[in-house]
Amino acid sequence: MIVDNLKAAKRYTQALFELAREQNVLDKTALDMRGIRGCLEESLELRMFLRDPVLKKEERAAVIRSLFENRVEPLVLTFFLFLIEKMRLNILEEIVAAFGALYWKHENVVNVVVKTVNAIEPKQMAALVKKLKERFAKNFEPQAIVDKELIGGFKIPIYQKVESG
Image (tube, rainbow, N blue to C red; front, top):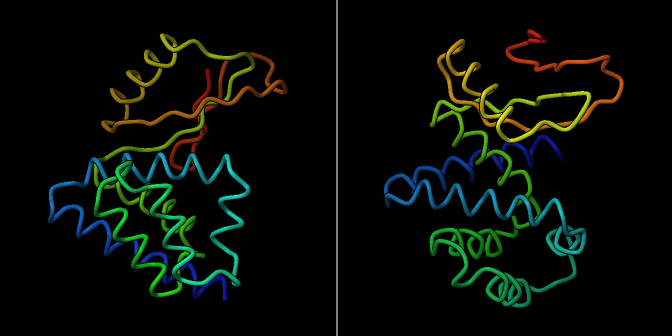
């Protein structure tokens, strides 16, 4: 079942990506999907709603409209309503994650986790990202994590290799 959901999520993601590109709203759609990913990460209630098998399509659509209408790109709202019709809203989390990965790949951006012993300042992160860009000829989207087990410096896993300093 999980493998089927992942396959379906990939197909739906690809379809949304292509539609957004054709309609020239890819960047806005990516921004909306990123915001929705944040909502999903923060709200257990929203995640439970997405997976609730008891709710009727009309109830789901009403909730989705109340949450997202006039707040996201119309394509995104239409896509969510389409997922409800196809009874696939339960895989929205997977779709949102896959969309982000597909968008970053399209934009030549690599997500990286920067582990440091102490919180890193925005200026320091910007300088680090600049150095990474120079070294690897890619854009980087960093995620900072404090790892108290490090003795000092930082650790960045990139392409199965660990950069440290």
